[in-house]
Length: 349
Image (cartoon, rainbow, N blue to C red; front, side, top):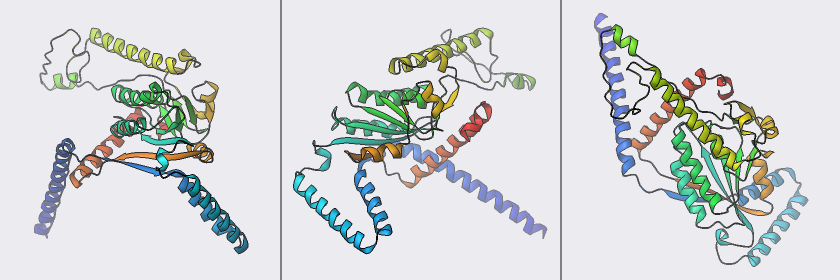
């Protein structure tokens, strides 16, 4: 029995090692394959057809036989009328109707979705005119300053070309997410969507006293007075701390200026406190322009516009999928850790 127990323990350790090794190899392979990843492709999905199919399905379920027959004749007549009126060109090239290009952005801490966003914006700019519109379904609680700065700059490309931009927030657009949202000509949000968090935060642990207690020396060599202000392992100085705070204040000021330029009606000093508001309160503060879900807005527009969902996708090989799964798991852990350290943690769970 003792032999079986020892063997079982050895087998469990071996399996654990193999799994850990496989995950590490997968992550390394993913990073390597990312450099030689296959070029992605653009998917264009007409949304009007989807709405029509939903309507027809409801009619089929609710109408009696006579009404169904009459409805079928009406639909057939409309289809013939459309077929005669339409040109041989693809619907995407048609100029008769207003076109709305729909893009989704689900942001994480590193705003990794910007890789696809830049391709989608580039594709839209090859076709969009000032009479068209771009709708971004945005969901993000923010993250790294430089990553969300790039994502905001991608949306700014539409603004510079004079393409109307509408941002729809169904759940959350906070911090870097709101930085992106404020680029839009109008921001629509659900009544209980989380808006705001216009602030900057940075924190890091310091293990200097622990290392010193265990007689472990740590040397940090720099060239340049402010090359490193605060460190995790060295002894932090008051001078370094003051410089770090100065940098945070400067970043916050840039954030405020960015929003103020794009939403001049906002009392920036009142809202740039790091607080968040639900959609109904955000409307009172002019942080958004109307209370409406993305579904409500798009179904309204479908009656008078042609809607196209634009999605840039990259097919990933198995090692890449493993690496991506590991990255997403780490990102979720970071989000949970971050939420526990903030006063608004209950809002983001």
